[in-house]
Image 1 (cartoon, rainbow, N blue to C red):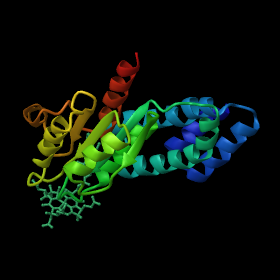
Image 2: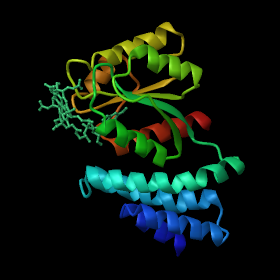
Image 3: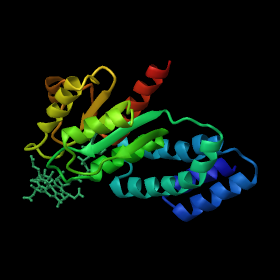
Length: 213
Ligand code: B1M
């Protein structure tokens, strides 16, 4: 069936085939939400699970995510017409002073794979930019990624500034990256630590579903 074919093409990271199959599914009259949920997201979930179990690695995840983006590019205008709401909105960036963005990009892609709208602030993002974006764009979640022990301390500045600006209760602050631990998360007063991108997207989706309920 075509939805299974979309899922498999995505898992194989075959962007062109994903585009072809998504267009074919639309031509068959399948609605955009079904293609997103039962084709693309289903495939991305499989990739996420395999990544967590070390059955696939970073390159496979990146090509699958690229294929996912190609597929969602086709569906985005149709989903907007149908009034399909994203699950929620997050902003993400590497913390001030940190240029390592591979893990951050994976987290972004996994969040998008869960139907979460993501504002990617890029690398070396200062606390003011995280907080101002969360306020101006009404983000439910702030995601900070850090790979350097020398600059990870700025994550505390993000939490403190959120308190200072009066949005701490409204925003869920997630932290991660190789040197980050649960103890560090607790110490700086963030809301959630996860060790990998797939768990980050699971926790984010869990939080947003609970918020909506
Ligand atoms: Co640099 N670097 N690097 N580096 N680099 C590390 C991190 C280092 C551990 C290498 C080492 O010394 N063994 C070391 C840090 C030491 C420390 O702080 N304790 C280091 C250093 C020192 C440096 C420089 C200072 C080197 C120098 O110039 N002297 C410099 C700093 C630049 C800067 O940031 N200001 C530097 C530069 C670079 C490159 C530019 C060359 C390149 C980055 C390219 C890029 O990202 N575009 C680079 C790389 C590639 C690495 C290593 C080799 C690989 C990092 C990586 O991408 N891993 C790294 C050594 C290593 O880790 N083996 C190293 C793959 C990626 C998928 O994993 O990002 O951990 P990761 O993401 C994971 C999880 O952590 C988690 O999900 C991902 C997977 O599921 N995760 C989150 C990440 N963010 C999350 C957020 C979440 C939840 C989970 O919630 C919000």
